[in-house]
Image 1 (tube, rainbow, N blue to C red):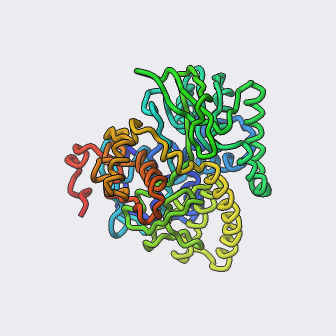
Image 2 (cartoon, rainbow, N blue to C red):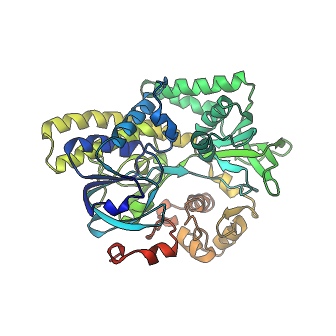
Image 3 (cartoon, one colour):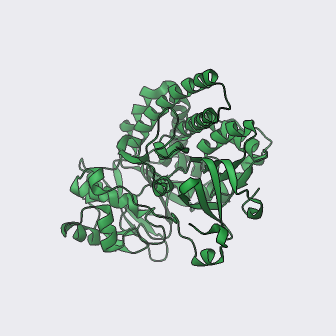
Amino acid sequence: MTSWDLKVLKSKYHIIIIGCGFAGLAAADILTRYNLDVLIIDENPHLGGQLLRKISTLKQTKKKFELDPIKKIGFELARSIAGQNIDILYTTQVLGLFPDHRILMVDHSEKIVECQGDFIICATGAREKYLPFKGWTIPGVMSTGAAQILMKSSGVLPAKTTLVGGTGPLQLALAAAILQNKGRVSAVLDQQNFKDKFGILHLWQHNLPKIIEGAIYLSRLFLQGTPIRQRTGIAEAIGKNQLEKVVTAQLDDQNGFIQGTERIYNTHALAVGYGFTPNIELPIQAGCDIKFDKKKGGWIVCVNEDTMETSLSAFFAVGEITGIAGAKKSYIEGRIAAWSILNQMELVNGSKNKANLRLLYYQRQHQIEYGAFLNAMCNVSDSAYQSIDDDTIICRCEEITMGDIRKTITDGFLTVNSIKKTTRCGMGLCQGRICGPVLFDILSGITHGHPGQIGEPSVRSPIKTVPLGAFLRANNKTEMK
């Protein structure tokens, strides 16, 4: 079933899976074996999340060698699940979760519907974080993930020549992909030292494919003569109607720009990334407990480590929202949640189920260790946020600048919510999805306050913007009670 077939949507399901990246796929793969009514809801037009974004790959008959087997597993699961007798809503957004596991959602045609599940699995993934700089709102400046989407889904290069910057592993992967697709990369700018990445060698036993993959990316850049500049940051993007130039400079020990080291790149595309933040808006709105864990990527959903169940009964959280660590951890946690639900429904043998879970617990711990390394590699220092220029826009929707935020902090507003109410930072169209984590990091960098003092994220339904007409057209059955 597709998102334009909402009229035949059941009013109640045994299990509803929200988000179908690797965590959702893994859970669905197990649950569909037990003749259960399962509903999958995903914002994308395909299963598999960002890693499996290329839709045509699902239909390929020619086998392609993948260094990391997790991609092959993902494509096989996506093909299998798409062929099952299971309800799947593509291009559909969940707006909120309400008592008795009632879910309100809207599809691409702005139809609002409601359904209910005995069990909910939330696998809403993660999004990229940002470090604002002068000119980052100019067309042509994009995230590394956006550049990947252009190539994967549309077969379009960001530009003939792209400059890649930021922190983390996606820089090398993106640069190598651009070169593979006949584009040019003027340089890869890394805010950290290259030696910081060698920490992954301590985790080689369980992450060897990633290490080899990284070495292949480096080799490809080296053979193409693409420079990799360490300890280099982006000072400014310049352009009127589109990006024209990017000013970079080397960084000192305090992550400040070193005068006299400026370099100008003429380019129409700049792709930057600074790590990831979990998409925990729905669990927060639903009432799940959350906590701050820097090693896991920031604010995450609290779960029972043995079952992946949250503080809400029969509500499970899996994947990046319990800690940033990549596809393997998501895949493992999806399976843990599925077996846990089947155990609660008394559909599996208890002793056999424990054996299944024991191995998954062991595998998950190693992926958590990898996640801690990944998040450390993506770390942006407090001083980097402190040094943002006053006229740099922080909230793109409401055009709130760093100067506005500094003044508000000086006036004594030291929490995310107080600054939000005072300046409207985070109250625009994206509802703080871009500037919310940035504002938190700015406050943390300037005040050095405890995460709990700075303030937990605050979310209300609808968790994403919806045209008012969609609610006006909704019938009485879809109204929130």
